[in-house]
Image 1 (cartoon, helix red, strand yellow):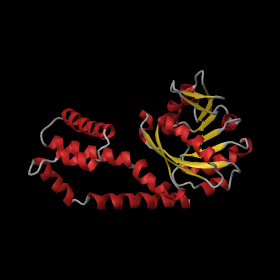
Image 2 (cartoon, one colour):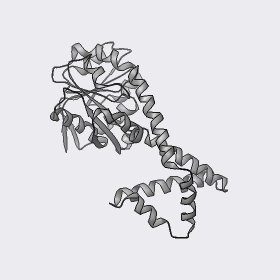
Image 3 (cartoon, helix red, strand yellow):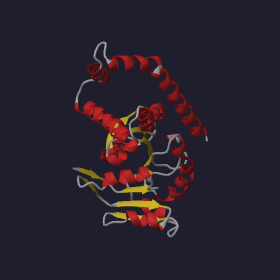
Image 4 (cartoon, one colour):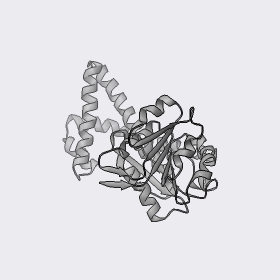
Length: 274
């Protein structure tokens, strides 16, 4: 059982909604309640429950102020370009001990600390949060104590595992675990196309490729054996898999991933610069 303090989520889209789902698990108790905001009444109504107070900005202009009042943790789930204006809006309504946590890429803790006097923390969860299997990087601002970071960790641990990193590494982390699901899905797309080219139907290809990726991931998660060793166990000397791996090796996948993550990191730097 996990017991968390009062929480507000401002901008309960896909990521905010995933975190809300984690907070609503039977094993989690949120003392003081959960308040969330969305733009439209329809979206807000869908999240309203006996344990969630849900506000719509279109019908309640001061929804964000109402949501953060008395909240111990305030999670900012809006787009990066909206963070500064949102912080200015809620600053007068934050309690002195409120911890402000942003999941927006590229917005530094220094930028946030210049707007609000509170403890601020950056977090970078990835989309498997939707199924409770996120990897979330957490980086503390200059005012955060170990207890503050622990409070933020507890929120994200409801949807997966958490890795504490220095803020200088948070953008690099986003290029691996943050963007990583897209890399995996892209690989799956291409292998599926290859299966179809070999004569399988799209349905057959999906069963083979999706099932193989899921099975391999479960195998990796269930054992303490490193992936290189698991690969070697599939790769019989002189066999078909060895020949296929040799072809993949010529593509210099390491170099490709180096360039891909460098491009993502450069974009994160651009976002931080405004």
